[in-house]
Length: 243
Image 1 (spheres, helix red, strand yellow):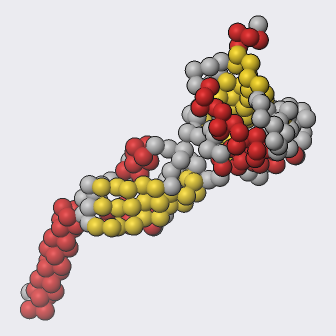
Image 2: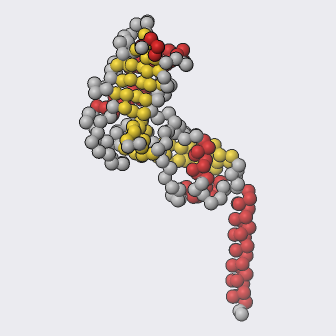
Image 3: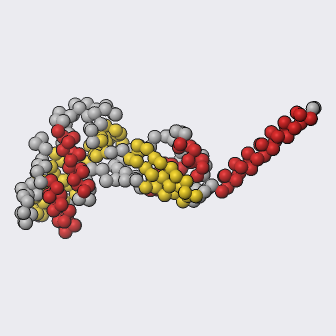
């Protein structure tokens, strides 16, 4: 064998040895021991970590960055996009940008999630954290990733406005119900809140945020449907009083 051929083989072997050494170094020294996740609301931190680590072969910060930046990661429900930042060989920070889901309704035993435009974005048996159940949406048929064909288009405007105002007051009802006249009823456990129409909605929810903690453990109906600015007394009827 000519010296040139031997030299090439030697170079290739050296490259392979260096590559293997480099991969071994990365594997040992870039193992993820800390993962900071921000921007999640629908998932717990443990759920998101499970989603992410379950998709990659190695819990390695460089490999994770490469894996998701090259588009190899599977779509995570309710997540629009993510940013990955390697803060140290052992620590990564992930910023999650979730889809703008405003509520869900039950259809044939499945929870159907929709966004502010009335687009049906997902169906699941799970209930997402902080996402209210919406009652009163009337429709004929459903197609995923298409707008819900409602009988009254104003319903989505009412849902989004109500959901946004409730968030400002840091209120998370279990259920938001709308009548045909778009009058609003909220359910917080055993407390039913009649809000009436959307007039003075900010003031109503602000008062509700102050009253609700005092009703912990109670069962009954709170009447804010006849609320007016400056009104001091709010009626609460306990369940035993309604019998």
